[in-house]
Length: 270
Image (cartoon, rainbow, N blue to C red; front, side, top):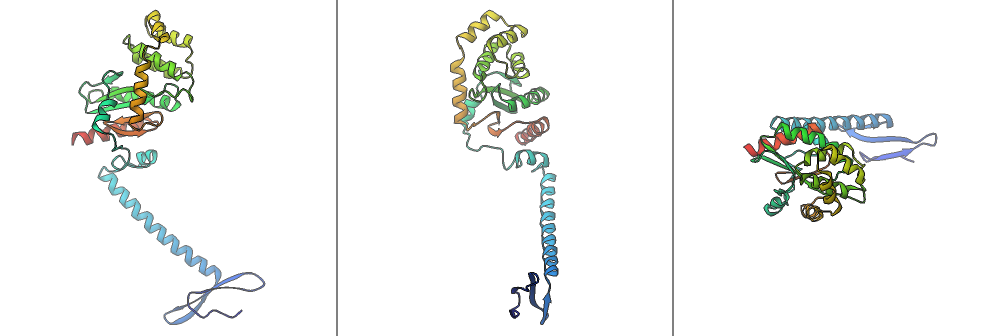
């Protein structure tokens, strides 16, 4: 097969092996470039282009970090910065009032700068992963932060989750919610009635009153109301947090949670 005279065209030829060649013109002179030289040139161009793009992105990200608009760790965990990503802008003021229910178990400041509402399932392993940093950091920022706990039990996924939610509210009825809440997570998955009664005894509850509350499902309507509010606000799973109405889904470790708390406090105090 004859050569291709048009600059920039490609040709495959040779029976002893497939050879790739390129004819082009440089400063008016026709130049023949072999297969491996062509590959080398293309790789070099790709490397230079990739390095330039990477450098540009790093510089832009560095500038964003300097300005407080991004955090590498948070971006890795949440796939975006707080300013661009985590807020659910569809939460209306009416929804926010429903989410921040004053009758639900709460911990922290009575006049908070930041209110965190957590919809949880006591059988959810991701809620279990979050519960210690949530409790610890709520206490650390207790003069500025208020934590409200709402229920979103997923009984099909976590058998006994409904019973555990009833039990927690029965404990709240005797002003022992938080100690009981902690016991449910520490003993996650063991939610038979005998277990729940044992936790009540260990928490210092009146076991007879607690058992009556549990047997009659005294707070069934309350839990159903929590689920209704959650669905209306866009909750699809657990844990789901609302930071002053901004929705954040998924487990939060201590580093991520503390960054979020500081970011939202900074934002509210501007």
